[in-house]
Length: 174
Image (tube, rainbow, N blue to C red):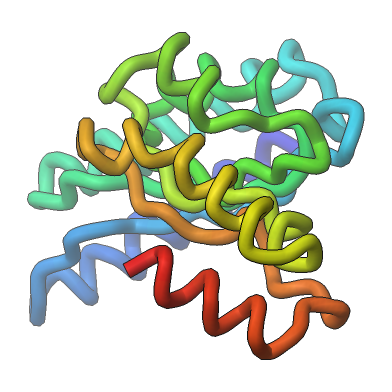
């Protein structure tokens, strides 16, 4: 497993070195989906052992090449993994899936602006109508005002969201 993960880290570094010869990159993104509704798919000890050294190697190398931001996409309850990802040099997480108990307001209180966050608005509010949509937007408004947060839904739009509710959400989001 370590050999495979080293090969992946080596590939990412080599690929990005070639890309960075021709352009600058603002954000490098990892995509893990490392959790489900009740927690991580593998324990924090395994993430720390197998993944942390490779995250760190990639982020440190790319940071040395001018990349400042490192994002990671994972669904589910990622609470136990956030400190490890921060230690690995990742500084943006998303989508903060509300139905898995992820609350961007609580996460901000715990980690401050060292952790940038994208999304986290409960998509289920869009099925309930304007009052629920307004409540969700009011909940995340302080994060928008603080900065380091990009407001958006915590996942794809459910199929039972009406067009009227979607339009209302988009207008209010603006």
